[in-house]
Image 1 (cartoon, protein in one colour):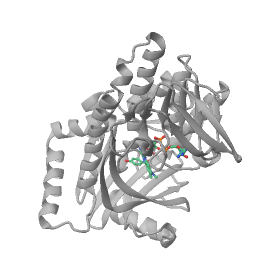
Image 2 (tube, rainbow, N blue to C red; image 1 turned 180 degrees about the vertical axis):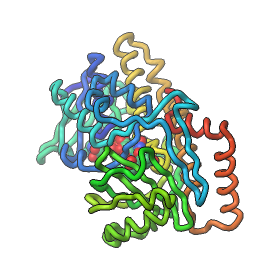
Image 3 (cartoon, rainbow, N blue to C red; image 1 turned 60 degrees about the horizontal axis):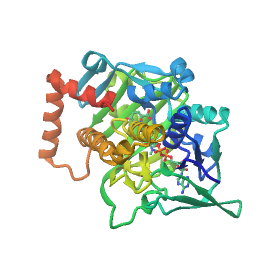
Image 4 (cartoon, protein in one colour; image 1 turned 60 degrees about the vertical axis):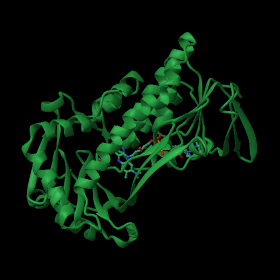
Length: 389
Ligand code: RFL
Ligand code: PHB
C-alpha cells in the first residue's frame, strides 16, 4: 500500500491531522493499535482552547461541538480561604469550550469514515523504517500477516507509549522529565456540575478539581497517592474527600451520585527533543506530556497538528519544505510554554509530601499575588485560553 502521509495512532492528534490533510487533498492512512470502541472508552480531556475549537471548524467537524459544547468565560481558583475568579473574557476576549475528548474523537472518526478515510485498526508490531531517507515506510502486522505502507512522510501520533518516539535514535533524542509524587483520582458521575465554572481547589488535605462534560454529567478529581488504586475508594469516600477540599459554599450544594467511572492518572511533565527526525514527525503525547492541571495536553497536541498540517500542505502545494523543516523548533517553542504553565499550576495547587514551611509560604505568596494583581490574572488567563499558534 502507498500513501502520502502515514499516520501512526488514531487518537485525537492522528485523526485531526488526517482530517485536516484530507480537506487539502492530501492522502493519509491512519494505523491504530486498538479498536475504535477502546479509543472512545478512554475518558480524558474536557477543556478545548479557542485554537482547537477553530481547528475543529476548519476541519469541518464542529457541528456537534458548536451545538453541545459549553463556553466558559472564566474559572475559579481556590486556595484555603482565598477564592479568585479569573475572567478569561475580560482579560483576553477569549473563552474555552467544555467538550469531552471522547466526543471530539467520535466526531473525527465519523468524519473520516464519512469520507472513506483509510483507518486501519488492530495493527501490531508497527515499525518505522528508513525515516532518515527519501523512501520511508511502515511495516505492521494485522491478523497474523505482515503489511508494508510506503509513504512520503510519517506522523508519529501514537501517544506516550507508542513506537514513534523510540524510532528516533538515542544519540539524537533528548528527553526531559519530571515525575510528581502524587496522582489524580478522577470520577465521572451523572449529576449536575456543582458550579457553572471549573473550580481548581487547594486545601490542607490536597488538591481537587470540579469539572464537567454537560449539564447532567460531572467530572471530579482529587489528588491521591501514587500507590493508591481506584478499588480503595468507595463512592462515599470519594465524595467526602472532594467536599473537604472545595470551598464550603460549593461543598454544601454538591449533588453526589454513583460514580460511573473511576481511575487514577499519574502526573508527569515530559518533553522529547527534537520532534522531527528525517521524514518522521512526532505530534501530541508521543512527544510531550503535561500534568493535567491547566488542561494543556490535548490542546498542545492540537497546536502540533496545526504546525505539521500547515507544513505538509505547503509542501504538497508548492514543493517548498521550509515550514516542515521548521516544524520541531516551532512546535517546541509553544510546547515548552505549555509545560511551564502546567508545571506552575501543579506546583501552586498541590500538597507535596516533602513540602516545608517555606514552600507553603511561597504558595501562599503566589496566591496572594494572583488575587491582588490584575496583571497576574491576565497572564493566567492568556495561558489558560491558549497561547496563539
Ligand atoms: P493519545 O490520545 O494517547 O492517542 C494515541 C493513539 O495511538 C495509539 N497507539 C498506537 N497505534 C498504532 N501503533 C502503535 N504502536 C501505537 N501505540 C499507541 C493508541 O492506542 C492511541 O489511540 O495521544 P494524542 O492523540 O496525542 O492525544 C493526546 C491527548 O489524549 C492527551 O494529551 C490528553 O488526554 C491529556 N489530558 C487533557 N488534555 C487537555 O488538553 N485538557 C484536559 O482537560 C485534559 N485532561 C488529560 C486529561 C489526560 C488524562 N489522562 C488519563 C492521561 C485528564 C486525564 C485524566
Ligand atoms: C477534565 O474535565 O477532565 C479536566 C478539566 C480541566 C483540567 C483537567 C481535566 O485541568
